[in-house]
Amino acid sequence: MKTIAAGALLALCPMLALAQASQPIKVVGSLDLSGPAANLGADSLGGFKFAIDALNKKGGVLGRQILFDYQDNGTNPQRAVNQASALAQQGADVLLSPMTSGATLAVTKAVSGKLKMPMCVSTAAAEEITMKDYQPYMFSVAPTTYMLMRAVTTRLAKQPYKRYALMVPDYAGGRASAMRFKEFMKELNPQAQIVVEEYPKLGATDYTASINKILAAKPDYVWSQVFSGDLLTFSKQATALGFFKQINNRFMTVMDANTLKMLGDNAPLGIEGFQYAPFNYLGKSGEGKDFVTQYKAQTGSYPSDWAFAAYDCITTWARAVTLAKTTDTDAVLRAIEDNEFATLRGPLRFGKFDHEAGVPVYFGKIIAGKEYGQPVLDIDEVVPASMTRPSRATVEKARKE
Image 1 (cartoon, rainbow, N blue to C red):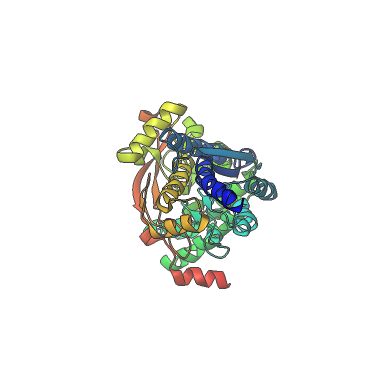
Image 2 (tube, rainbow, N blue to C red):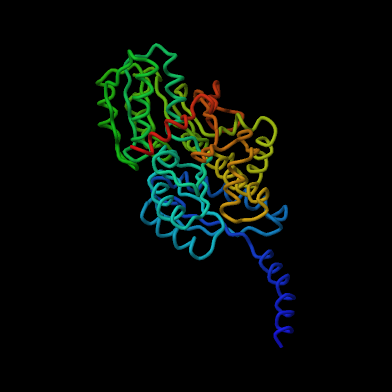
């Protein structure tokens, strides 16, 4: 009887392996689909879905279809932790991070790190994610605040401006950006001074007081980190008060294609901006052109920066799984560390000590963009990661502080 049982078990093993191999691969995420970061969440969701649909049409990953389960965290970090934890524990192969830095920092520690589950960061930029609060089960295709501010200050330090005003949303990523802006500007342009700093709440509805304080300080240049829905609110109020005219358009903030589209005819033409992934620049040739064409055909809209980054998140993870020939966490992360990945922003490698992708930062000025039917950034400079990545010594120092 024992021999028969053993033989039956051996015969069953290939069937069990086949059944496991036919099980779908599961992608989960707690996303910011309402609240202050709703626009980022909606655009990211579009990119995630587009990538997953494209992969499934080609047979999935390792011959297995991909299932996508997500919830709306309302731009609330605690809700994001609760949702991500529940989704992960129900069974998942990879976790997508929220859009905002505060929620991402909470989820990376309480869920991805604790459960040892791979997590891809597509949008959140707080440098703590890959530096001070790094845990080895995450990887990021978003430029960090360190990288962004290194790029921003490198560009501005070439200009004759001396008196700077800062207007930055009061949240983790914003505060980190302001800290690095001041640090790098002092290094690159010692004559520069910060004449006023304003930190409105994320999701603020009235920027009048900040606008008036900045104008009263008479800065040579205004650097801001106001983005997405907040930028729409700010820009409308600033234009009504003649803010951009009074500062001669010497203003820069983070832009994305969807926000520019929503600004429409109210977009302050001539001000500067920086982007993660401008569709009008990346869509001119190669894989980027195919993505922009197909995305617009499918959705009716041009892909925003967040859709680009979300697509890169999914496809990078899928490629790592294919290289590893398994969804096993350690094997997938080794593949991410050891290989170069083709993305919409060009070939990328990840740091072995921080799992940060070497992504560039794109700069330009707002133009009407008539050929696209919406304002766009006319890209005039691309700052490579070789100029912005922190050294290993810098990262390790931050982790000791």
